[in-house]
Length: 259
Image (cartoon, rainbow, N blue to C red):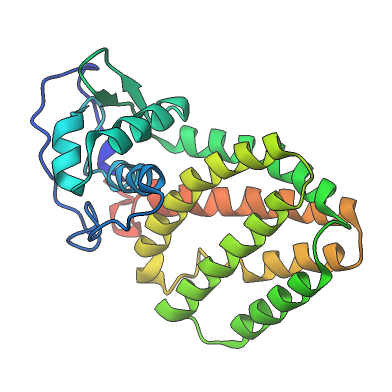
């Protein structure tokens, strides 16, 4: 089980902002240098990854200056990222003292999935007939090729890229700028969860993380202009992917079942 599901300190505890060990890649906290564009989004994603990996634990203070030094950026994108994470329920802002990490558990994963279904099922319904048919055909072709490839790290990487393309294409074509913006916020959150989850699921050769058939099930009715059919498929996909993330991140390993 993730470290952040254990007992947590009261909000605002004066922790040093130390880096905790992780079973994932050793520099997953920093992830290498940030590119110049979209710093707020990139810092948001880095902090999310550290929370979901249990490297920033519940109750831990996140200090702007230290995060700025860690990610080698100015304090501005760090402050913006913390405000965004506060709106998503990941941290609590502390007046003039940065933020504190809130508890994150399987319940939060389920709540994120519920909100995504409300937003993206409607967007899928609305995007029917609005999406460029050539874009749908190209994406369906690419995902179809992926389906025939053996399960491995490269296939999983390419499948996640196609997942990003599909959800982005639907959000951008729904006809509502407000709906698109809100979907984008939750996709940033869920994609980070997804990436951490898939990294852990490598030990099962991604057996719990293969959603390629679900993507094809969404694309087929979209190509036919069947908005209701596509919306139904999107609902099933988000339910399934939410359960997969919860299972990978929060279920005890089989060897721990008796403990």
